[in-house]
Length: 493
Image (cartoon, rainbow, N blue to C red):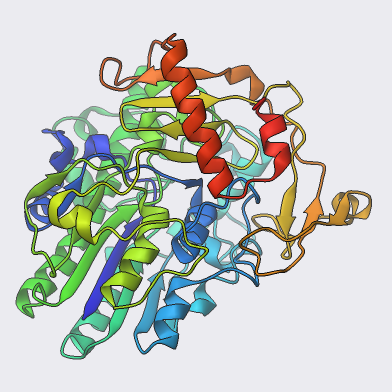
């Protein structure tokens, strides 16, 4: 048996034809839906990028204990487990966060791996005399530095074959050609796109030339801030088309994988999974991006497709509530005849793919120190911190790093103690690092939404009985995760 995972970053389900959008260019996603089970109730778990990938490896939520960070010494890793049991694992990615301080322990869990540079503000090509910062879109000094580096990186991708996404999928296709006749392998093809900045070559913009590009005369505008919309309506529309052009590039590369599966007749023995870590706001709720605001449906409710040759379910919809980031690890282990570890809370999805057998009645999701969210597929409940200061909040870790750097001496000097082991730390005591909180999350309030009657989440619902039921789900799932006691205090639970 073989398995291929194609992973995109920031893919918005509402713009995909299989999920009802009839005006975007994504024929290969439509083709994918005809060959797979399409999930209608797929939700994120730990947010954003690297926390979602820690979920993928460990099969359990991690955002209640830890902010963005590496795999921990006590963490299970599905690719490592596969490799230790005779199934080769190979990672191909242009997702540069794997090679920062807060992600540096992930790629080493695979038997082999390849990396292609140049996405976003990846500090790749050194050029002192770069673009004029005045002409580089950004709202603060940090933005200016990253956006300047991005413009430098783009100078080295004159043709599509030079772009990191193209190189990632080319390497993935080469792996498939080289190994399709062999057995017992797992391939993860992972691209940063369509994550911002939304860069694509002309042939993908041409899909929308008549609708937009032929008439747009404004400035370069393809990197939205993590903030409210202040741009003109024309600029907002332009940003969306830049995203859709990048999505069209993703669609073309997905088609290359589907072509190879057809050519080499791989559908009989090869699982195919296509998913994303989260969605993205493109002006909805008068907002851009993610993470700084509530996790609305555009971010939390994700596209997800699975072909499982064991059941052969294709061209079907599945409505059971799933969380790919924690469910895919156990699903892969099950596919290769292995049992999930005792610490994994995700569920194998073979039965859901086959006949929509439910695996959960509710799911929690969120980001460390943010609102805590729970959904049962009908309602979403967003619980805000009880106090404005958003404390108490701690990081529990043996790997004290942020996204791009280590914790500072000031953070560690007076704010660290050894905690007692959690149920999943295999007897290890972790560092309990205080000083968290402070983010102005309290201002969002606590809200309940009915996704059937209010799918755009415009009007919070007041229904004490539903809220009580959602709180009960939340507390039960927190207990299953062995959440730190102070999380209950922070959230007023």
